[in-house]
Image (cartoon, rainbow, N blue to C red):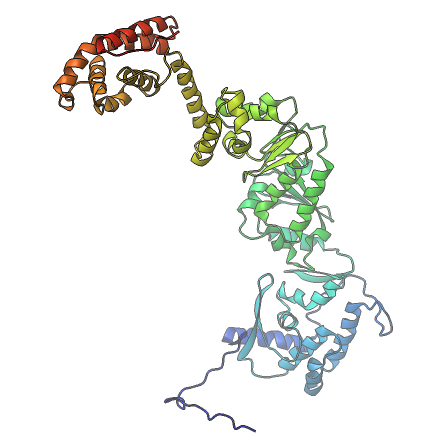
Length: 571
């Protein structure tokens, strides 16, 4: 056999104190030692001190029975352990025994610790739901059982001793004034119900009828529907509690958890009936909500009572369950409108007239229902219902635009050419507000339709007449100021036309040096004809005088004559 390697040592090792750290073990403070010593002495004096008050039925225990009652077995073994509580050897064997009652295994270990020993080193039990506490670890018992037995006056930890009993269908209720076992039936004492409501994470007022901020006794008593909705809890003893949506959203600690952690198993739904009191705005008072929606709300509340649903999301989940169950009409935000009430629906949405017109256009083109989620996802529905999770037009149009933009452009703005795809793509990438985009589109189309009144098409005239035409188009679209820079940067004959344009609009100040003498001379001669052309353009394009088209033709012919240009005749 090979020899083990020689031990490697380093300078100073002999003088270095070795420290061994064990997770979950710590040096107990004087306060902890005193508390544990007191608890263990009480346990030694009365080994049944950690037991709950037996209020439920306890079955008879028999080794030959298939359906053994766990509480009956535990009680019988506790009696045996109690009689041996001063027998350290017997306790040592029992706390390490693999078989037998698990609770009694931990009880034996705790009683052995109570018979004397060092309390300076303790184990620490931690649980995010039940809290933490120090205890003396002896034997093979569960940590939670040892901690619960030795901290029998801790209202939460003491319930952990009975976790296996709870799994078998037995019920326990713990509060500051008591600890009871109710057998196979969850029957909490009235005092317990009052305790959990008074000590919940949401402040409640009242007596047999309680309510949170945002509600009052009348609302809870009469189940009055509010705009935001509220949670109604009715306990088996008749106590009713109403919790507003605002209170659920603002609470820092789980409301259901603050109550359920005082019972074992922590299944609050076994002792309380829950309901979400709400209906969409506009839904008829004499009409029942869809059964599918009611069932969905029940599912959500069941999950919430099992502490698997966040308080802050409860109201939204219940509301969504109801809204998504509606199979007809218009569902917008948290409101409902009948199929023939499109105008009212659009009137109550947030958006400009252009946005509402575009949305109405899309809805009129639909062959079936549609659901537009707040994240932009579009779902086609078989039912004749329109669902918008947002009540603002803009996010809805953003989602609809790639698919239905063509419908909007063709039917409202009469655009039916190659520009459609470019417009759709540009707006999709630009993410401009749809109100501003549609207003700008309408204005541009309005200007474009006016400019189409000009007798010559764009770029149909030769230079410098074409340059004069482009200046007029640019001025109508963007204003006179936008043409100044363009006129200054012109060259050749266009430079002369640019100088004439600046003279027509009195914009020549400090600009003479930009133009050569020849251009200034020619342009000066063209000013009267170009001025006549601009006056005709104003009448035709800005003042809606359609008869001015003849004046525009005559002025362009005059400008062609003085500039020595040729012009194509217009029919």
